Image (cartoon, helix red, strand yellow):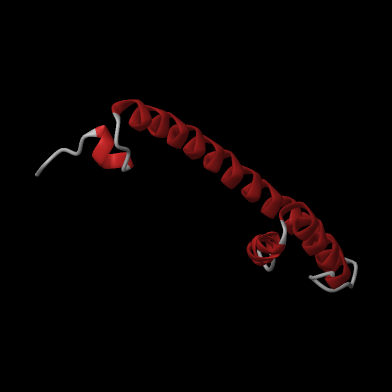
Length: 96
């Protein structure tokens, strides 16, 4: 089993670039952990909303609200934002 060097791991051509990439990847990993935590928190809040809506006789999903969320993500992030929002909404539906 061979151990990869920093430049082999990162695809960089210099040790300096490999160090920069390694540090940036650590930051990305930290950001990803925070994003996952925020999505999990959003899922929990969404479950509370859905439970209240269903208990009051309403539907689990409010399509007009989902359209607002989709537009918000699209406006902030462009077309890929819509796909990201769709995935997030899917994660947040039906958890109760």
